[in-house]
Length: 263
Length: 285
View 1 (cartoon, rainbow over the protein chains, first blue to last red):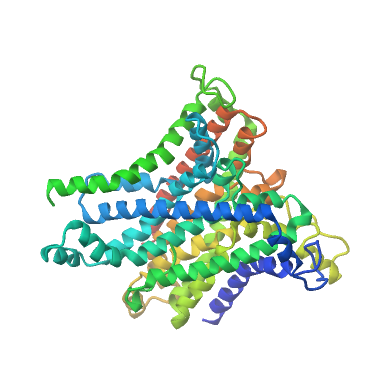
View 2 (cartoon, each protein chain N blue to C red):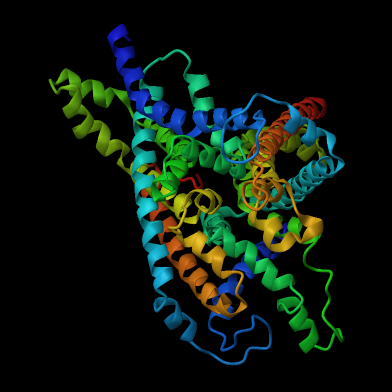
């Protein structure tokens, strides 16, 4: 049907146009984000890389993202193995509990964590942000890794055990390589989630801004906008590269007909 | 599996449960505790009181705020799902060998910074923004149109754009799972395309529709960024008022009560919706 195809293309335009304004106006030689264009410039990009506060916030975000990705993927890995390979009582309730962050608005989680850190006297810091991000990301990691564990043949592990490998060596030599694409996908997905998360970081980061918190601060100053758009354009390019990597990793070793996409 | 094996299973779960207890259960418990405290401010002392809840439920201003937030989110959810369904249908049934390329193309815009995706709409809809400056330079209007930004409309448009992927993907997955033989059978038995869609495709894709609706409704009700950037006074939502209690106003117990009440409102609305949607699916079948 032609009309459905036309609709799909129009919908695609609706999704892309607002996002494409970011790179478009980041090259416009004017402080004002408006038509008509006044000329091509890369000065917003030079200004961006000369901005120490931005570079510092970027460093913070990379750090929090890395810690979050490692922590939530490790936790997801252990839990996914437990859930898929043992018949444990109460697994359903446990999975429900762990998935709870998906059903709670971020604002609620953010202030609840703010209260907790205050109550135990833990200073607002990037560590608190990473803890909050881990609770958001464990459900994602778990979903990706459970799918991966369910996809492989348990007989391989049993064969390894029958051939005399211990539990530890079986894990490293059989399980781990089989689950590796899932681990890579989980690391990338949780990293990107943390890297883009604003609200928890806004409440929990204290004086150390992450990149979204830094961007939020800049949005109030019209003079800084073109620079923020340049930053947005760079984030778009980097995220797309990471996502393509993640999809590639997720589909490694999956039969060609079974390709899938999404979290 | 042996008992010892099960113990190993529980040991594997323990670290995840410990972290989630610390990062999820403890904060929510504390939130409930704060919502019942008699003193305002960050110090937890004084007796228990229900006065915050009396405030939340009793004040007309808060009731209006809750209804507006739920209303905006419900509208966003309905519009986003309705717009995404034909898109997902196209990818699942008509994209042919371009299916994977379409899926990638549809997800790419969602990997920009969420803040900037929302902010883009402020640039587009603003008084001196993209639409207005384009209209002016084309001489279609003599002065900028002010009604585009800072109202519930701009919040709905922005959220509909920002959450589209969360509707497209679940609906696509449920459409993709439909056994094509069922569709052929319906045609062979004399169903036209419309009747076939209503009796087979739509009911079988309802799990995706319900999943998409929940995935969008829950976070948009509590969204802070969008109403703050493009909402203006008429478009402010629950999250703005909750955040205010923890920032300028400094009434932490009231903020905690508002947060828990909004969580409950979202939960009850979502549960009612799921029940209604399931009943409706049964009815069409």
